[in-house]
Length: 364
Image (cartoon, rainbow, N blue to C red):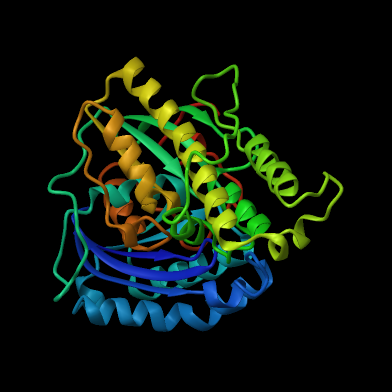
């Protein structure tokens, strides 16, 4: 069963063709990072306009690279939640229109849930691919650590569509903290890759930052860590708490900047791994996966693998950030259990918990 996946929830326009929830035939992504880097973050109106320009060419290219005609496509899967409303509308309107024109079943996909399913892709037919896939799909019960710019969650999957949200961020997501700390110390957007690069040259023990203690041991909080970094940077350059954060980068030398990047990354990743290890000990899952943009962080992967007693296989780094391969993959599993959506009435939901998706009947 071949699924055309479409993703446009934030600042990547993407389309992919995935077969049977595991084999990738094509994966096309047009990123807007160069546009939004000038603003230090995503500008919703600019993102939506860029999606409009890119959506049709991206879908056409994905079909061509997969050597697929519309007759070979069995269904369409599209991100309808959560995300920026303007961005979501572009992708879903394109998917709805194509579903009607080509008489294809349409499956609405939750973006955060889909990140987990990047770990279910085990191979590709694309020639000369450099993607390093897991040797096999994860087994249930499966513990998923979902970490991105907008989400930090621990989720226990008992099966496809049967999962429990163990904990989530109570303020900033870890990816958001990466972006904000990068801005404080003068590193470019997006913060994840730039901090990782600087951290490789720094001392992760130079500065000691706190870990938040919360009532739910699986919940996260990164706002205090972000503030602790800000105060430490201000102190390091001889300024007090009233000194504007946007003026700090000019006062930092490269060595100090690298040390702050390394020390922040160390504690941020330790926090994530501490929670994941506790959940593993408490629930004894058969497999553990990490998902989302921050899952590409090599230090996080190293820390997690070093502290768990089971082997972990990671999704290719290119499938950790937003892409349509994960949408098409999850779409296949939706198609096994659910009726398709009505393309005439499907609406986007910019804020939607994983516990409110169509096939998960839990209360949030």
